[in-house]
Every structure is written in structure tokens, then in C-alpha cells.
Image 1 (cartoon, each protein chain N blue to C red):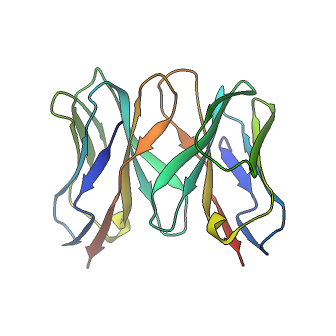
Image 2 (cartoon, each protein chain N blue to C red; image 1 turned 30 degrees about the vertical axis):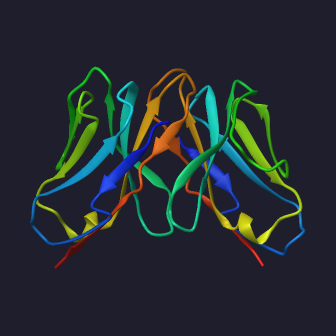
Length: 112
Length: 112
């Protein structure tokens, strides 16, 4: 059974800092890994999708990496801004069933 | 706009009632899903349909019945609502195969 853990559960940083969010998983036989952002009371916004054959993906100030052998993915946010405050979720597509298994989430707060 | 849209956004109802949540996607995706986000913000899959065919049915009470009239629509009907059904329900869709998901904005169900 796939288990997905995100550390830390919550993080508060001052504006401008670079930060790393971690996602670890127990079964490395994944098809892809997707990072989402969820604002309070809102839906999920897809940030980055990494296929199993890829090592990383970049979009603006965001960079996500994937190391299947060690069961880890990181989401790097450069020059954080208050607007980055949200909950960040990683999710894996693995196995024969086309479903996502979500991590526990990291709640990020970027302060002025 | 191309998107996954679900209605209603908020639903407050009494215990014992029957309610439905509707979902539509205009992305041309083959697969649609219902996910439940509990009070601890953990997301878990409930159902998945591929071209109107049920392919995933997790351990969900029989009071929950999905219906897919066509591949662009997936509705969720809930009978005899209970307090524990209070949660945010997300609809999502994806193309065939392990590619990225697109989520709707969620329906916050409150059972009183």
C-alpha cells in the first residue's frame, strides 16, 4: 500500500526566503507525481507534473524534483511571496488503477 | 473557459435528506473522479469512471451512488445523509493514461 508523507506539516517563513517542501512515498513504482496548491476554502490548482521518466520540472519560481529510487520529491519555491501562502499537496499516480494518492500536505505561510 | 465545474459550491442540509452534486468537464477527458476531503484536509478517492464505465469504487457506503450519463458528466447522489458525510467533495478529470489531473473547485457539504 502506497503511503505518502509530507514534511513539514506547517511552515512559516518571511517574504523573500527560498524554501523546500518535501514529499516521500513508500512504493517507487509510480507513473507520475503531481504538486498541487490549495488555498483556504478553494479547489486544487495543479502546479507541476513530473512523469516517472523525468527528474524535474520548472515553472516560474517553482522547481519540482523526483527521485524514484529514494522515494522522494521536493518542491522548491524561490523568493517566496505572501501570495504563495497556501497548502501544498503532492499526489502520486501508481499501480493499475488510475487514481491519485495524496500526501498529508504542507501548510505554508509567507509573512511580510 | 475550459475547466471542471461542479455545482453547488455549498450545500447545507438536514440529516436523512437525499442530495446530489453535479460535475461537468469540457476538457475532452476520458476519466472522471470523485474525491472526498475530510476535516483533516486529507483527500481520498471515492469513485472513478472511464467513458461512463465505473472503474474504481473504493470502500464507500452504498448511500453514495455516482452516475455518469456521458463522459463529460459525473454526478454524485447521496441518500440518507449523515453528520459524518460533512466534507468537501471534489470532482476531477484526466485524459486516458497516467497524465495530469484537473480538479473542480469543490462542494462543501454540511449536514446538520
